[in-house]
Image 1: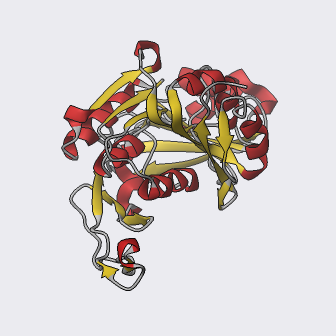
Image 2: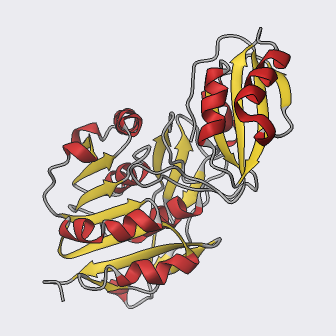
Length: 323
């Protein structure tokens, strides 16, 4: 999780590992020493998605990065930290960072990506240099003898801002691929844990009638509204926090969050899906899929689990009534 400040001059960055220890005492000590921004990272580069409300996403081995004003003295910072942390303080690594728009630095490698046969997620205004098109398909009406034209590409222009969701993570890719292959025309959609709004907006661009994006993070609400306006679907997309939500059941409910909140929210999410409607769940590891799916079987007929790079997606059709 990252607390971001707007960078207008060089900064002094401090990096150190805390392993599996509780990071909170380290964070408190850094803030007391004058840190203006803190970032918790996985020391092994294993991703963790949005946490459940009230929780912190921790990894087996955590690394902390802290930014200080450029004029801060590393010796003073180390002394202040040692006075609070004592022997728990690991080896510290200081470096000076030149002025850059840090909150957007990671986007430099974000390029147009295709999901399924026609859906493209693009950095705002960018288009793929060479458009890949799906092969022509036999027309069912002609008994397979006549070919129909490839599907026209659907472009979603995305600026995730400070909210999660670009399509680069396997769980988001699994959901986008499902949307590309789904019949969405005239359907209503709820994106629970919307992040940047990528799934709700993709559904609308692919033909859904309306969508609701919901998230616990107000920053996600802002990013989703901005991206909806950028893609000219704002009039069909409502956005709110979970606390503000008062939703009618929808034809499709998407929840790309984490295994534990998916388990806890099973009854809530089931109540948001119309009989015969679809639910799409992701944000969970392959080994978590079967356990999560069992919590949804009272309400849904569950399809075989889809897997990508060790992450899983669960799809289901809502029964007329719970078992």
